[in-house]
Length: 131
View: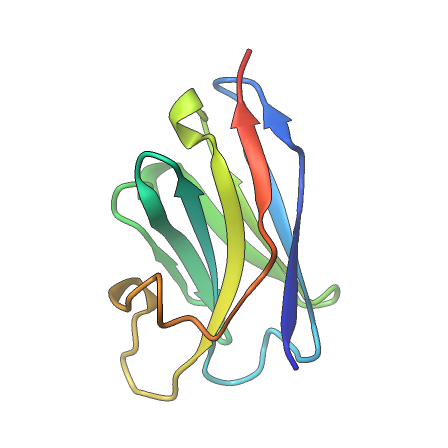
């Protein structure tokens, strides 16, 4: 069973960079057709897709966050990391890492239903942006 677990700071000051890491167990992040995503949830907006990195190191970012987002892998540690630049209080959320398996050519994890179509989620980590 492939599991994922988020880690990172619980609070960040406005204008700083948020960095979260997802540690994966039970399977390698280079396993073919696996897509490793970050999703966040706020009381006001619900679930929001942030972005992903796939088995081939391709990245997929939400257009709304793309200018501030970077997702990259550390295959030696079997982890992938989210960096969100210039955070504001609106970035306060529970952040989840999740994965989906899909062998279809041209699959884009940004186009699936974030609430139902991911195969597994981490427990989530609360991040608060406040001065």
